[in-house]
Image (cartoon, rainbow, N blue to C red; front, side, top):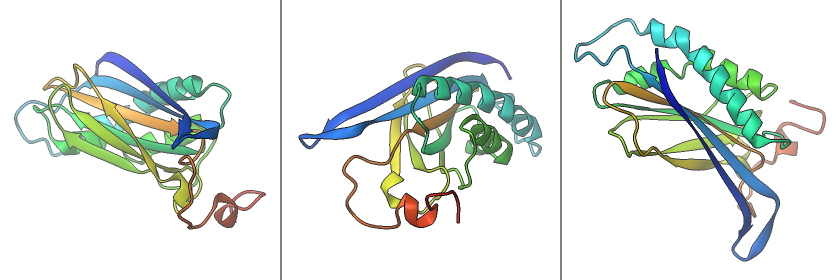
Amino acid sequence: MDIRKYFTLIEQTHSEAGRAVQPPLRKVAVVAIVGNPYATGTFTEDLSAAIDYSPVIAKTIADMGVSAMGDLKIESYGKGAIVGVGGEQEHGVAMLTTVYGNALREAVGGGAAWISSATKRAAPGASIDIPLAHKDALYVRSHYDAMSITLPDAPLADEIAVICCFANRGRPHHRVGGPSTADIIGKDGLR
């Protein structure tokens, strides 16, 4: 699977609703634009080549994302894919299975929670919202978030945009209740 290009997007929020966000919320997305070998116009039963290649892509883009986070500790993550119109949504899903997720977990120093994801089929210029959730405890409501990504010239009909996202904290000024990190994870790690 050939890689045409990478995108790295950084969003950092310092203020919301007239109040400082401390620490600032940094979200990072890294996108790899890869060739889709299944965009042939015919159905392919076996998608194992995409699954087998996905940890290579995941390691590359996750390492780039961790680097873009700088010294900030990663608390949330998410994943996604946009498949060009010559392919099927399932081709993107094949790029995001457990082996892809395990490479993301390894890059951020571990993660116990399921990794939320989104996939779709679209033309260049498409947008996608990548859901974010706490890396160790899916039910920590303060960390339910998303990062919106628009790709100006991708994916082409025979490509897949493979995406990982990271954040250093939950939403600014969270105040709608729900379990906290301490409630689920505790001070000394997972309960």
